[in-house]
Length: 221
Image (tube, rainbow, N blue to C red; front, side, top):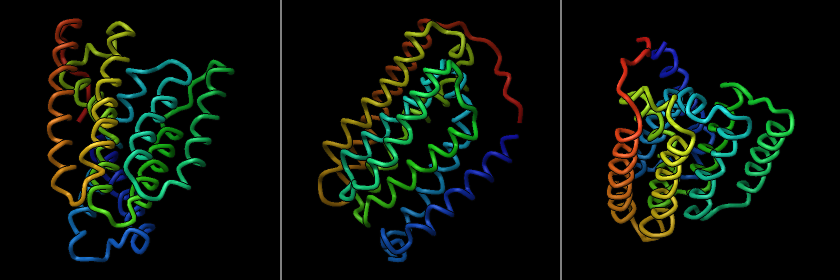
């Protein structure tokens, strides 16, 4: 099952790269690293989205949570006009979920994540700092997925704990989007992303370890 998700994620990453090939100058040799990073993030999203649904199962929760990565993307990419449409689509679907009291499934969340990934890469317009900040914006989803794997009890933890894990990751991305991801070059954004990611991971892990019991993972290979 993991291999299937990884293959789908890789395919999505390749499509995003192809769609943004010219607009974000991915054909330039100096941007080859960004191509690998885009595909890697797409694979991580495919792997972690099911965990996001499990950790935030309430109608509107997982969908609405994607507005935080969108905010981080908006905060650091030069081109933002297209993000308003993406935000409106995600917001309307989240509102419909709340009104109908029915959460959409993995297909919708995969579509939403793909739109966000495309929005981040397209909006970067070839700036290395924006590539880093835009791709790091997905850290809250990856953080939730990683901790759900390390500590499967997260899906049964108190609502406040589950929400706090996502918020910690989102806070890290928002900080990076307004600090290193606004400075010239790749190094400041990468440095800040590593620091913010590590701090948020340690804080979230400590919270999860303190509030959940360890149980064997039920993930299938």
